[in-house]
Image (cartoon, rainbow, N blue to C red):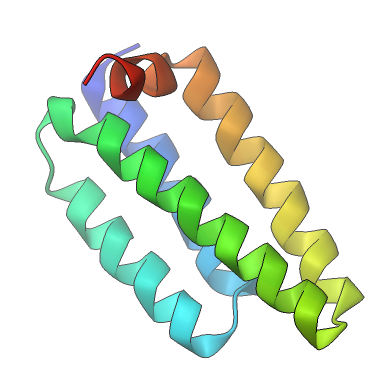
Length: 97
């Protein structure tokens, strides 16, 4: 996969998470998305790790609020992000650091 493809796909998934997150988390996803779009290829692994941590926080927050709809949407996109990152070996890249 080309680096541009990886950046584009990661940015797309962050945008989807941004759309389903509550406003404070949406701002954090937007910020991370901007960082990804301007990042060097070596920075994608750490960015994915941060995105996974952020979506995990959002999922737990939705559970605390009892918001099943938000949890369902976030969990689905979290799985999509994890699968993409794993297939693109971005998680392996982060584990090596």
